[in-house]
Length: 349
Image (cartoon, rainbow, N blue to C red):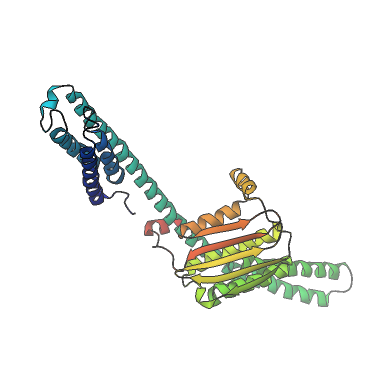
């Protein structure tokens, strides 16, 4: 975790701020004579404590008190001010410096805790995403290697029954059972492809997107045009799988809500990041209305896409309006950030 504190820079900032305060005080000394000499030094305390926490703030307080007493307390350049009401100003300044430093120290601690929690959440999300993908593969292999084979074998046996059965109720039941088995085989094939399409791991993200386009046209009548650059294909399997599922989620939204039968997907490389844009010319939507429904628990899919991308250091950008379609751009690093902690991976797996 990157610390919020900048101790060396904070002390340097204190010295610079105090020097600026001293210069300003010297320039206007005649106009503020009789006013507490510590007024301008509060800015140095604020800057030091804001960036460095308690000790730079206390350092600014002590240094400001010494400079104010030695240089500006009346009578000039003497400590006799402590024998007058100036003692009240001095103690007030010291107390204010301590309080300000303590308050801003608490702020920095809160920021550090928030960053630690955010980092832990990011790593846990990454570990859970990896665990989810492993589970997807396990289920997909089980469906393909066992359940589909059993269904195919059952259909072959049912074909023998149909051939030997006399015309009548038995043959009709065999034909109906054969049709049900055919539907079950088709369903398991679609389910296997939805969970973990083999083409994604074998040929890469671009090939996986083109396969998805053909599946959406076959199943939903949505014609999806896919354009992309081979060099934009992420080398990281983690990023590749996440982007694939994010694009599928967006295309499902198009098929369900856009009231159009056409969409496009484009993939390009921009430095160290990959950009995937999913666009349609459907009915669009009002982002403010969607945000309100999100608060009530609606459209969780888009929220999930955004959160999963953020966990890998990416983001989702959406441009839409009623009647103008939707253009959503997914931005993700070609390589994910540092791996999750082993403990988190174990927990997630």
